[in-house]
Image (tube, rainbow, N blue to C red; front, side):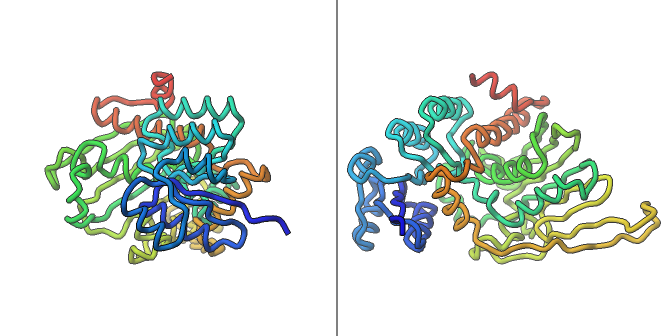
Length: 352
């Protein structure tokens, strides 16, 4: 029987502690230690009898883990990942991969230079719902993809905004929440080649947006719209419809629709709509449920990370792939600021 894989965690906040729980619950790996300079992290480590280091470099040097989960604030993702590459330690980097496309390009170069594998934590790609939607679109069951609709509409409670950074530029739903949905749409439908966007802060009056409307052009010719607002009571968002996190009351509603020339798919309700024969608006539509497996995507992500460390699998979300998602989000922000059509590829060219 092989020894359990030793995985460490940098950052013991909410998502970091979730990673710690998953590692400790896994029969295939063990927690090598945590790195976090905060007093709260030190108290947490003492209470759970865990090795705790104030600096990730000390953890890497002393514990020599097989892998490191980077669950630190976004501005630390790049330096921590670069240190992992230098030390030869594979990393699972929480989203976003880095703060900017320019810094992601630096990390891409380090990965190419060292050959150390890095997996980015867009964990929804491991969800059976997203995987099934991708397979359905790729199989051709919808025909030629023509239109995509995404909704992210919910109401964040007032106390969410007690932290000042959530009321300032960069703290709104575009950069905090939309990145998940953009990654889902890229994974399911392919690359986004052009973006237009409008934003508003009228609902709350903060410096940051509370509402946005996006228009997307995909490389395969499909057009998409995404409407975002964190200021409205509504059931149409991944958080409230997917049932992925028990903290959110699940709603039996879709948040995405993928429409093609032969059929349409609602997600995460996973209903496929099509005609049996003689397609046209006078004919009755047939609704077919798409069967799913049930598993925790974070557990699957940890399994996959171990396979990446062992060299059995290639990262499902590489640094370069995650940089593509980040480039779309930056393009959305620039399109909203300038009123122009923005290409994510141009964002990457300008950052090079």
